[in-house]
Image (cartoon, rainbow, N blue to C red; front, top):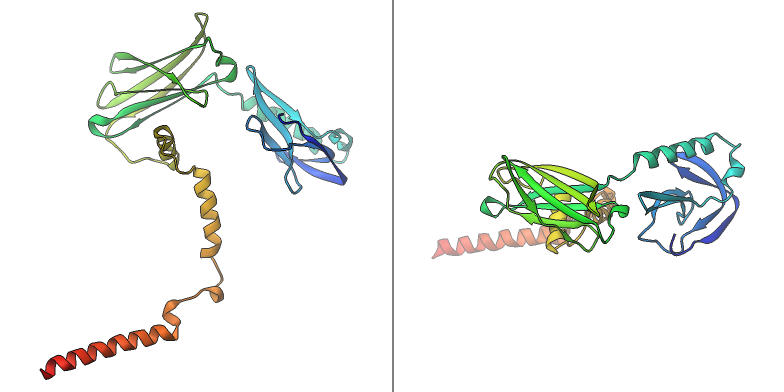
Length: 267
């Protein structure tokens, strides 16, 4: 990983959770800072939580680094060591990324509707000489969709729907030196405009428009900080209607109204 980690030692064995199975570890590597190219897969049960298993994309797959240097010494303590290896291998096998991940959706309403397509290529397919093409099929009609490189390494494009209603099939093909090396598909239905089904759709549209204020994780974190304040004990809550000056204010208002009505009748 980058930057290289530092050696960490503990007097007593710590617990490392690998896919729900406990490993006993006394020596491990800890990242000096969080890397954007490394994905932590497991953590040690310590504070701060140092990564125990790391992964990063390379070629057609990923490289996994187990930073528990002496975990093998504790394999006789329990069967969690063998189960942890099996669970890790099963997770990595099931988590193999597809060659081309295609996401498509419809934004806008009426005649302003637009079909958006985002194609994310696996790292081994995103070579500079890779040719990425996309096409949209609907109602027996096919139209090419130009894709442009985006800052995050994906390809993005947009076009008007081929029909006002109906199913649209999106196909993305990746070729290198004229040979097809990967493809991906997506299906969307163009129909009556509907509100966004989930918050992720709103975030995705805002990100493409450059108007993203916060992510779904940021909103969840903000709400989690507000929830304890809303669930405060009853004795710590303050009610304005239970104060003496609020009662005086109400009585003063009623008295002023009574005086005004009496003065009006005397006229």
